Length: 527
Image (cartoon, rainbow, N blue to C red; front, side, top):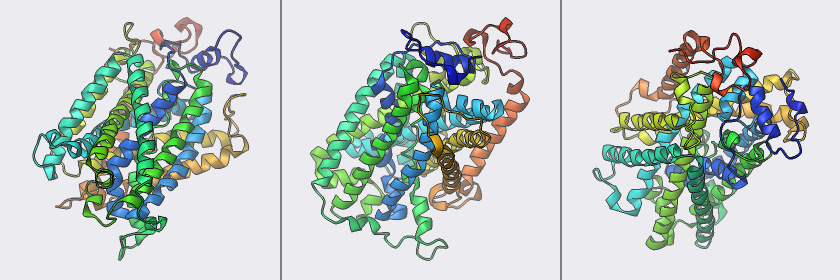
């Protein structure tokens, strides 16, 4: 097998390193490389989606942390930047579909790889449902016509959110099934609109500022009388920021369909994260400084939608909200796309049921079609199960984020162990953290552990916001994620582990060559 440190692109062969990276992991190139620099950047920034995240959970941050919750935005950025920098080294060396799964497998072994992939795949399907709920927060604000069920409060809001979300998931399923080119065109156009709208929104809000920056130190007296005081309220409110800044790894998950991903994917990851931090941070800051009444009850109910309509007026406000709808749509598209590539990557290793079907690439559309349909159906199922649950927004969102953070830990923790053992060497000539690798990696791991615990903590405000109080709702994150992790790994250990091996149709070398798919590694799915 080729030493990755010695692989360099050959003259006249732009894909030499990229295909060699696939060969090292045991795969042959199958997906068509059609995506350019902006496409990979767009994939990362559309998953993060500045407008989707800020508009979906601004109300939550204000309700639980007051205007001072804004400081959770730079806190989350610094933590996620540590993770992203680690991912950049990996993206440069292994630009491969299902990046989290393959990285965890390469760094921590097949068991850690499967568990990381399983957590990420489940989290992606939950995230798909969570993002789809953002339609409910925005569309009825544009027109009451979109409130098909009830008056938009309590159970009727949750039921209507499921209807709107199902329509969105159906759309992204169809687009992804018809190929990466169509997805990339829609995604890139949507991201361009989102970025322009976000920058215009920053300018418009800045023009309406009515108070000084001291407003973002206002805590509204939240946390008084509690054990941790305002710090506890701040940690709860940080969910609103944590929800936005993740998914930057999508830029590398499309590595097998991108041109020169070993160089472009790390750039796309950092650019997506930094752009989201700067633009999103300014939107939140200027919203708090420009809203007519900082103490308005609607701030903690309707969030940024209220700020836009109250500050900019109905006409301009509605135009902005339509741009938010576009942002939500392309964000959903990116989340779905990332999930498909992850399912394809795991199935290619015969690590999912019906693997040969899930890993099949359509000769017509040049994309795995079945994973698009399955992931879409599961996301709709998650929505339907929660159809009458008023706290559906915060519960599904928080669980999705926690699982993403845990999946990221399945990469950063084994990577740190490899660094400390001296076994991790970045690819020569590509992105490298150099002597800062260990401290950045340590911070990435500590951040992942700390924020996962913070998000999963059994707070009534998140997991049992409306009465009556039940212990199983308060501990919902631990219970749900525990079942997914323990149940999933038990299935892997007793069933799937014995079948693991690159399927022959996807292997870089044949069974008789003793490489991946060779003796001892199943190359065809077990019936």
